[in-house]
Length: 218
Ligand code: AMP
Image 1: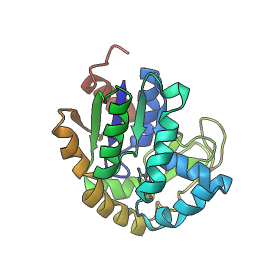
Image 2: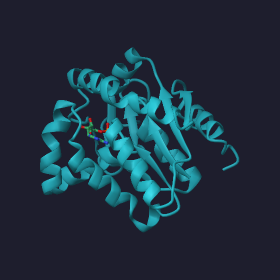
Image 3: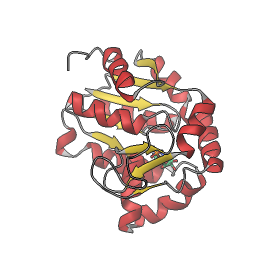
Image 4: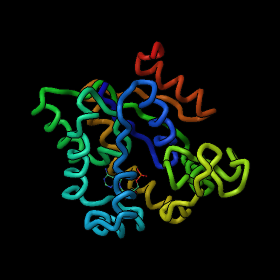
């Protein structure tokens, strides 16, 4: 399956993507993770992306689209993928449509995770992420690790993303409404959008998502 996951920052895209990708046996491709990996490796691409990310703005399309396409062209993504954080504006969605069409492929679904705005800010401000694996996500109040600052799953160090401050979250939400939400209409016109509530336990949301994708069997 070829799936796009969309939703505001803090909707739980990364967490859900990890479970869904595992259930569906497809790679989880997160442009945010790719940028963060480039930043920690000190690459030119990482240097180009950092200031935009720190400010809560989108990294320019010239950088982002090429990086996403390169990742989708890897052998593990031949049979499908779950995109998390890409496309994030209509021109990226059009670039993705064109690139899939050129390869005789198409998307199967766009899964839209809905969550109220005040919940988003609470979720993000308390979010802590494992340095070893960004799908190991905790929250200081909602799902605290057994030992503060240490990942329950792998023992890695937990940290707060530099762009997870309240001020930057508000900017990221503005960017989401202005730039990313329009892709939902873009994909509605193609009959691809399924919307689910992202509230509740992680396992409940995953179940809802699998049902919405018609894959509760997987
Ligand atoms: P995320 O991990 O998806 O929340 O992304 C973190 C940040 O990376 C975003 O706030 C953007 O600055 C940047 N980013 C990730 N994906 C994209 C994209 N598709 N287009 C532009 N910027 C992106």
